[in-house]
Amino acid sequence: MKGPTHPESRWFFSGVALTTLGCIILFVITYRAATRARSFAALGESARQELAQVKIAPHATAAEEATWVASGFASGYLMAPVGPLPCRACLDRLPPGDRDAARQALDAMEAGGDGESAITTIAAINDSHPGNLLVADILATLLVRAERFPEADQVISKAFDSTSSDEQIIAAAKQTYSRLDLDDVQFSTIIHLHHALGIARLSQAGSEPPWKALKNVIGSVRELSRKRLLGTTKGQATASKLLIAAPGCPRGTSSLSSYDLYNNLIVGYVRRPDYKDTDASRRHEFLRPSKTYPGAVNQLLAAQVDRAKSNGWKNESNLWALSNAEQVLDWRRPDDARLNVNIVQLLDWWKNDERCNGICTPELLARLQTVEDDLIAAAVRRHNVTADQQREFASAVTRLLAESHTDRAALANDIATIRGWLPADQAHAADDLLNAERTRAALPQFIVDPQPGTELPVEKLGHRADRWYAAALSDFTAAAATWASGRSAAEKRQVIVASRQLLGATTAPPELAELEAQLPWTQRMAVRLTASKTWWAVVGLLFAAAVWFLVVWILLQIREWRTLHTSFYNAELTFQRRTGEQPPR
Image 1: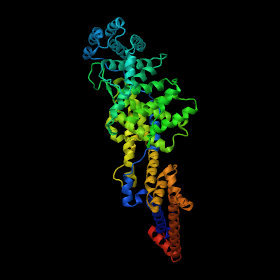
Image 2: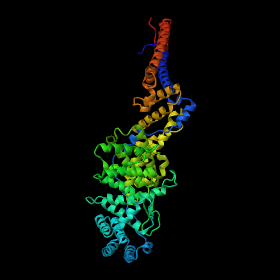
Image 3: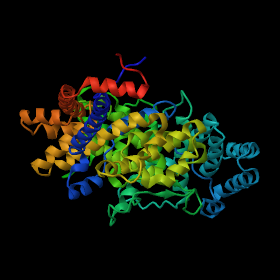
Image 4: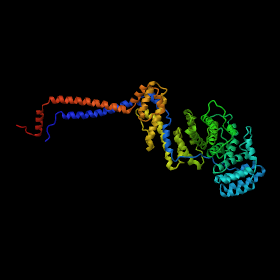
């Protein structure tokens, strides 16, 4: 039978249990109070309001987001399509001897559309009138659209061999004081023919190089583009753009653009890396007037030209492409999505460590990034590409968006349109990029608010959420360190401690490390220690343990004192009476 209970056991063990529970609560309160007092939420009201509005530059998050599109989003350089077909209004402006053949070709074109019958009929007309450039333009355009590139090449080459008028007009167009008009039927025909010839030669392996045809059309409109700049300002984004309508057609959206010409010349240089030229041509092409404030691309070009001179003109083809891209950007930012994407890809190629080592300083890279962000945003807004290029364009833009610092939230509607051009297994990447942008924008307010009213939408990133959030914290602390660099010493120290606490064991971004380096080494050690959550967990645990031992020791002393003043005979008698047991006699 169970004997009598020690009279002090009930209250003593209950007291120890309550003490243990109280010390656990004390540990939690101590830990939370210590860490919260050193978090961003502990900053002053004005400081928190400013930090809540800080814009996070996506450095670590951009690197993380780039992994989302590292596979399946590769794309090449996008080529501008062949120009539109001539209109019947051109007939009255042709030489009398060319009108009948041109009329027959236009009749066949309108009767047969882009079909085989039209090509067959117009080919017969072209054979009978080899020097009629308008007939050759109609036939070559139809052949290029049918992807019969070798035949288009032969048609155009034969037409140019049959007349010298094209050479005369091209030479006249390149003169500074040329009076040529883009609406001139012969001039327009020659530009469209050379453009089609460039496409035909770009699209077939082993053909003659496309450079002559592509450079001819650029040379023909370059002076006209410069003239158009007179009296304009930098705010007029398309002032250097020329619309080159097909012969006899009104200028409009279906016109060939000077941006199309530049685009395909850049593509030609990139796709045919065997291009070499003479020293005289190089001096003429790469010479730029000195500028007080050179643009980032101008600075990159000048440095790469100097390097190329000393290494035997390595990568010369891409250097010519960069020169043409710089010229376009020096005039105005293009409003052509295809050209913008190609220029960004070209700049990325030149920014590679192998090619830019010793040239691309952090300051230059930052300026080039700004240029690329502007071009990507313009490309997304315009997305003016042909239907057959939409998927490739969407793939390229999605990849470039992930690698850029562009504000995607401002482009949400356009991104949604481009998302529809992606295959189903890639469309989710566009959704994730938009969700990441929204989360990044909400992150500062969420961190500095002592009692955030809403949850961060990071969960929408699914399995990518944890890695992205860690990168986002790094970007936020970098932005906070930049902000704190102009604040008081006390606020600098608060930001350093709060940032270190937020990052935990994660490596600090360079901006935070630079701010921390301004402190004496003793303070740096103190900051590292007081910013560590592990440190405060240990402190809280030791404090709670000390309180527990003290209270338990007091309980033990009370128990001993009460034990000394308790009669065990009375305790036994009480137990016997309660159980009915008879005391021994």
